[in-house]
Image 1 (cartoon, rainbow, N blue to C red):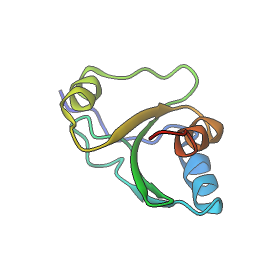
Image 2: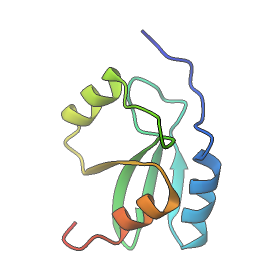
Image 3: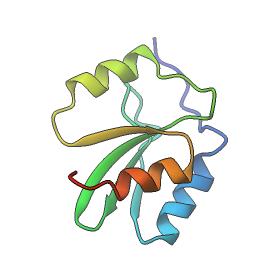
Length: 92
């Protein structure tokens, strides 16, 4: 079942904050089929991030996409702090 593409309430805020710290962000929210919301480039690395609100949940199609993806790191983030922590984690 295809869910209507909609942005979580914190989506714009997280994207803007990531750009302010120098990240490149491509919005993928309308792609659907479980694809994460944003593609983020930061300091030579690429990340996929699924943005959720504090109480938002990961849908089955998203879980399936996450398991099948073999192209890099995927994270579920609920705030700018979550997203920034992903970008600055050592060893990724």
